[in-house]
Image (tube, rainbow, N blue to C red; front, side, top):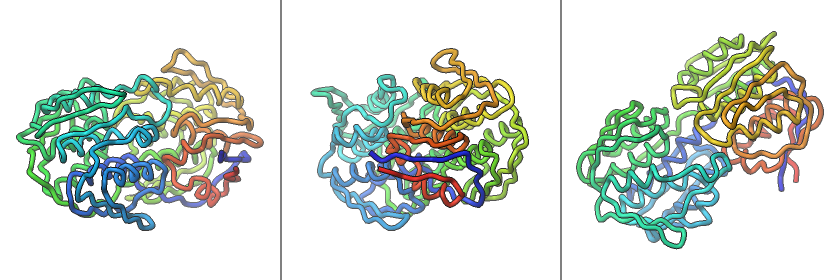
Length: 419
């Protein structure tokens, strides 16, 4: 199996451009099912999760024409209203295809979605099923497959018991072609949701309030398709910013939106990390001293759970103690055991909280990437560490970061993909 070999410590320099947002691209692909017309998606990241999503599109009868950083999808006819077990095992976002298929054909069959290990066994899809029921669908389970049927989805008044990005987007996609009006409350507010709504409205949908806790949708008979330009990936931008801070490097991050990173930049102020920002760029400067500061993950615009593991690595280099509190996903803190093997002084209080004491010297070890975001944290730790680090199971990293080894090499990192 492929792995990364990294020699540290490294001091990075230069510029790196942010790719299109993984979490926006993974939602616009199933949105293509809502129209029989072709949609062109630009600024698309070349990552494993995108490949798996396109396999689902082709499996149900759609066509895909792919260019360098864009592609065109057309689903004239859904030949098979079913998401295969094989596809669902590989990608959590497979659940996003259920709503559009149901809205277009009146039925859909799908297995429980897979993906990475965080929250494994504790990532229920009840929130999706409940929203389908609220729109008049009937649900049954047989042979490990969910079967959802509704001759025509009806508008609903629905309140989410917890904020969820994918559930908000799923219900939004399902309601676009429904009969009547839907009012969705306690919605997630991530920028990717607003980007999706802006595209759909441009094609004839009637969505108001995306990016706020309440979204109102007037169902329409059909929508068209056009061009969607994927917004910059705020998680990738934030990851590179943390990487620069942790390695005490001067780094310019291009093609990003600093407005999406306000919470991280505010935390950087507490850490004593200096930066400059422009309209679409961010420059991180080396810090003589990194101050400790605890964080608590929260839905947008709070501190992103997807930046928690890279930030924890950064705190191993801070001069003092920091409490890291993960509130979104179970099992997301398990990677900290690998940091302790590298020399970090981390005390696990419970499955959701750790205390990081620094600064500590890290040393190269053989590691395994447990999930996408912990995997990139392992890379940051390896760049700080003295000696050679190997990281196995890098498929998890490739799921969300395009050509990460090549891009880091261009900044001066000693990283190699082997095997």
